[in-house]
View (cartoon, rainbow, N blue to C red):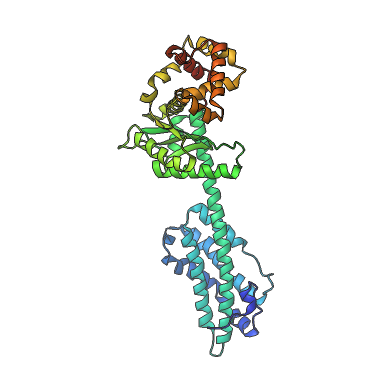
Length: 412
């Protein structure tokens, strides 16, 4: 095995001997021939290459090959870094990523090009030029390493940018669909979804530290998205934040009401987000039904929290009465007004909400709020004194719950 010059081993290009430079120079007249052969013959053996448009092969790829050959030959003459850069390789790598060429095909094309150039140098070498040939091969492989690094880095950066663009475009479409600013049928068609649909609402409580770093929040959203992809399929689209959000997916024939999907989502998400994950799924037969289904799923989770249901998957049947109590009619304003006396006492409303959520268990409520149980008792007594609602009675409890729901004091 030949000794590699120490300058090469440490990343710098060596000064080539006059013999090596002369050998490389004899290949300059073959640049166009080699470029045509690579673009139209050699690369045809690569998977997926034959499907590329003829103009891409004959113009872009051939031009990139010529640039690579001439760059190599220029650097043989000038090893001080003045012979050019890898900007064209980076530009073409970004284009190939945008067109969807697999990275392995792109990298194999560069490696194949290096092999063809090596063959040309070998064929051109005469007896007694073995040392010069070894110098050029060392030089060629070191340059190839740098080019492959530049190409792979640019391709992956472009692919990540394209993915982020598509994800954000999908998010904007889902946002417009749910808020009614975009037409449902056309939007879902652009999202690539066909009905019937399953619309899921997720509630994922944040940690105790509300000022958690943004990096941690983004990581959590990515982890939630990974679970959604596994459970609902990558064709599902979502509008997520660190607190949860909505997902729209095709309805599965073996899970028409989404019960199994919600159970699996709840199980998987609890492992990464903690035990207080909640979700609900509502079906939508047509695109026009999707926004209403999203609102219903959100309300099911909100009501389940208010009436003390434990975290996990929720169904409409689980909260049928409470859901009915939360609907607005001519009596709604009067019921909501029952909490006016404590409107400026958020700690009393929060204690009531937690007490209902924890099924009137004062110790569980105290642990949740990080209070002494006697403090919980005192707050509830003060609430009853100010509002006249005795939540220890079925009637007072139902009125307090309905008032909370109608005032929106139970966030989803």
